[in-house]
Length: 420
Image 1 (cartoon, rainbow, N blue to C red):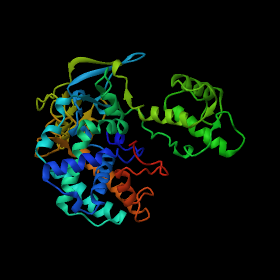
Image 2: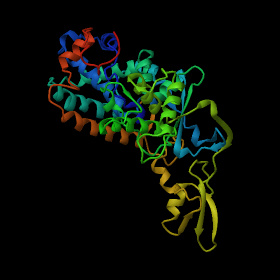
Image 3: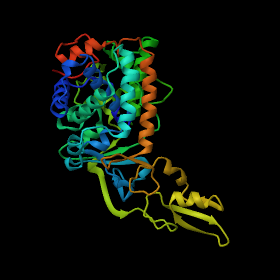
Image 4: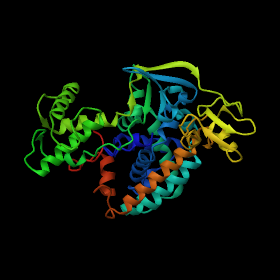
């Protein structure tokens, strides 16, 4: 879920967000932003959107696209060459429903949740502002600017931006689907194709030198990650690689040439980004509930069969929490071989009594696991920012950010956001 939001492509949101935020502040609080340092609102907007992108969890609990948790209630199966009943540990179900959006509640009750207030405000005042050499805005101004920015994110205006930065949200907004099935089937991280982005076009068959072999090797890794046949691992070039490269171009409606160009890289990166989504049309709900624990009586997805070494030896179906508690006094063996006891550490079932959550004043419950993971990502990003030359972000100054929102084009910086 977090990884789906971390793309740095177009890291600045559309310029129109500036008008939305300033109008919202004026209408709601009567703020006269002309009394502010002209850099404060642009910096607050940019930092807030960056926080959402880096921590990753916020859109899935406040926008219309939400983690439904159905995988913990009913068994689903994926029908491909055969059929596979899905383990809730390895996939999550998302739906899009406008009635689930928290926008009306948040808009009519201005302010930040305790989690947002604790993390975003300090991120802006203690990291973003010093990095850009901008004076720290008053805390109240920051909180209100952050709130207005978040309202843009969960309003209809922010949907295109979120679709561009989350393939989960993008899939859920497809007219025919309205669902997404996130599947963590790849244990290895995807290959990094960014070194090729600034390189000129090259032929996939070129083996003239080590530099070319390295480039072709990256394309081979990308195709292998997407489950194409690429030939033996010890050889960079192979007939299978050439055939799969041609097949990939045909499937993506690209020009049938052996050249690796910018369009090819864009298509490869897009396929890699979406490779953890299962085809919604191949997902079937069995309507069969997940098992019930014989010890606590709860109907939970983490129920499994255990052998219990007591006065009378035998096996029983228990949830991982009860099995864990029982194992402190007697020997308990997981007959499934799945090490179910550890699954409570990754479970996101919001109806499970074992799940630790943080509930905000709006009644939204967010698993502590997601908040903790997001905070760790933010700390890594904070350290990255602090290592950059002071006064800039990705080579852009605070004045240039403010100019961007004012409508001045920064065409020399390809990292910037969408069109005016």
